[in-house]
Length: 86
Image 1 (cartoon, rainbow, N blue to C red):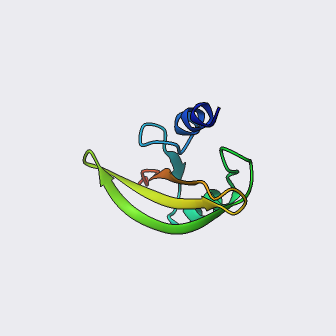
Image 2 (cartoon, rainbow, N blue to C red):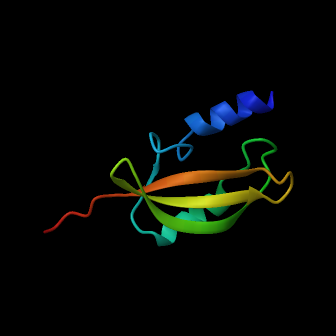
């Protein structure tokens, strides 16, 4: 069952670079990651680290998180929305 939950977490928004959560600003990453429930127990996530990372030549913001209840660790992927020049 844990493997099924992990598969679902990877398929959910933010679970991989193929499905990043779009944000307007890097400041939103910690807020959104901290409000995302744990994929295994639905507990609260603590943001351990938030970094910029390039994967396959695409820039992402990555939040490393840990569940405060069950200790599960994972990464959530974010992409900054393209800003429009006026």
